[in-house]
Image 1: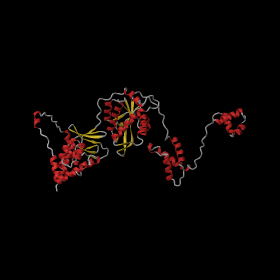
Image 2: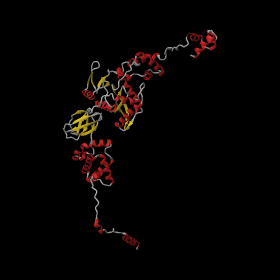
Image 3: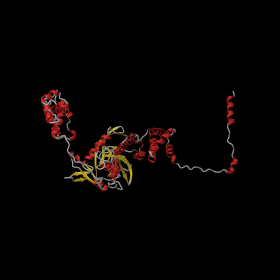
Image 4: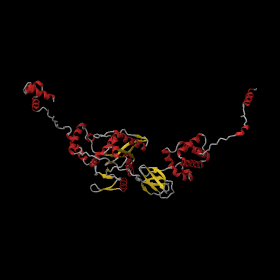
Amino acid sequence: MELFENIRREYEFGEGTIAGVARKLGVHRRMVRDAIRNAVPSARKKPDRPRWKLKPFIPLIEDMLEEDRGAPRKQRHTAHRIWQRIKREVPGCDISERSIRKYVRKRRFALGLIGREICVPQSYPWGSEAQVDWYEAYADLGGERTCLQVFEMRSMAGGGSFHRAYPRATQQAFLEGHELAFRRFGGVFKRLRFDNLKSAVKKILQGHRREETARFIAFRSHWRFEAVFCNPGIDHAHEKGGIEGEGGYFRRNHWVPVPHAKDLEDLNEQLLAACYEDEQRKIAGRDMTVGQAILAEKAHLLPLAEEGFDLAEVSFPKVDGMGRVKVRNNFYSAPVRVGMEVQAKIYAGYVEVWHEGQCVARHERCYNSLQEILDLEHYLEPLEHKPGALAGSKPLEQWRQKGRWPASYDRIWEQLMIRNGRQNGTRRMIELLQLGKTHGYETLRQAVESALDMGSCDVSTVQYLMTAEQLDRGRPEPIDVGPLSCYERPLPVMTDYDQLLIAQEVMP
């Protein structure tokens, strides 16, 4: 721009000729003519040079790009992958990766493999809509890298969000995530927008019609919201762009680096704290922070239901000969007589077994297949008649793996067998475990360790130590001795006796 200005000024007020200006300023006469015609330089033309080195590989690149048009979006060739394939499939190839990248980018635009569709900005009244989705993330739980499914709900008017991680995206987790999100926002949104999730949609019909699952219909009726489903396919992801963007934001800011937690409950507490932390931010173009918007929106939400929805999936298995019930292709122990029919309630994180109106067993839910989840407590009664089966039992092995069988149990068990014999000693150990069932296993552990420190391995000693604090010992009331004080006598003094002993030791 400055050069063009100098040229124009020199031509008008200085040399006055094209040749003179070009000679004085050291530029070409063509540039002088361009500056005289227009004060703004014209855009530079990018020469389309022939790609002599790339030309032999263009058919191969075109075949890969054409193949990508029918491939899943996340399984298409990158420019780097194309360069790697050419290097491997064409011996002696010395083409640069930069050349491949420039050509691939240009061709992808031409083929429509990249490029964004124009979206129309939307406005949402308070409390009108929230969007729901799942995304995948990894966390280190107890030192082990674990793949998790994360439920998320986002308010479209306020911008607040709720995130909760689950081992699997089951229907129980899906419904539980809704209830926890409603409590977090303090009310229910009038409309919720979803993908065509299997937890909610049984079959996609023509247009926007859906055949929904019975449990989702009952859940929606209980909380009184309207469900709206997006059109199927990746091309319609923009229909819930708010939750898609929220998932990316939350993952970049709170899942990087990979979070560490002792268990899933600890991780979800971290995620909830991150949701509250995000309330301090202000979304571009809005006057209020996210936290202020949540408070303003709360008055426009539907009120929470007085009672929560029963989230459990119910089945009625029978107890087999191993004292187990089969629930969702896994086996869980239950202290119920063989052959009895029980009620199994399946939740997102645990499984309950009910019999005669009482919860007789509760296990952490297993998401693998054909696994046995056994509790030693459920086998104590049959082990009293078969004590030899305790040492090699699978319930005992699982207690050891979970850290529920401390080393003090092995020490007192060994001493009981030395004192009473193998069979009777094991029976005494089972009696101790029965005490833990009644008074709590932490109390039992402390009592066992105290008894061992005292040098005792008797069951009665452990029982006394467990119940000693519960014994009601009344304090005696003071008695006025009155006239009986005349019978008081001084306490005996042993000084003379001690002197006699010393004199005896001195004598030869």
